[in-house]
Length: 182
Image 1 (cartoon, rainbow, N blue to C red):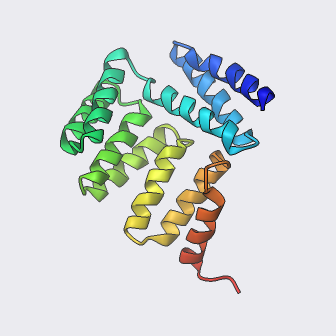
Image 2 (tube, rainbow, N blue to C red):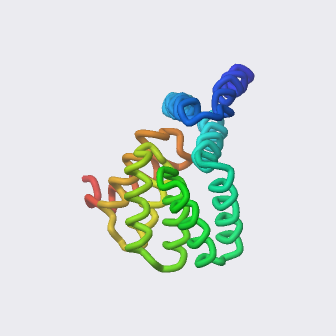
């Protein structure tokens, strides 16, 4: 375990990079480490570092808007959160996580088509955004689109194989999407 923590420390240092190229390199490094993580305990802090990297991918103003939107979502002020994330996207349309967070706020506000459109944008900018795939699976489940949820969960596990409960969830979705195995 001590070795795993040391490895984690070494892996998170590049995530503190400041330039877009350094940030992209750090993200690639972290995602590679996540895919190779031997346990949930090693994967969890990597997931957190990746999410931090994605949230802070924009300018300080975009990062501030992302933080504000997150606070608004926690307060169930989804419309205000949508506005914050929209402002972040307007300032920097290349910040994938801004689309993902707006998708979450739209979904919470009942705008399923808008949420799906934002998830598509998220994945266009960052196809390995495992959290966006988790959100997509949740949206599909809410619509009883079991095949869509199963496909999203398969992609999520290809990126983050140590997702807590991931294999059990995949089996459940497979059963719902394809029927019982005999």
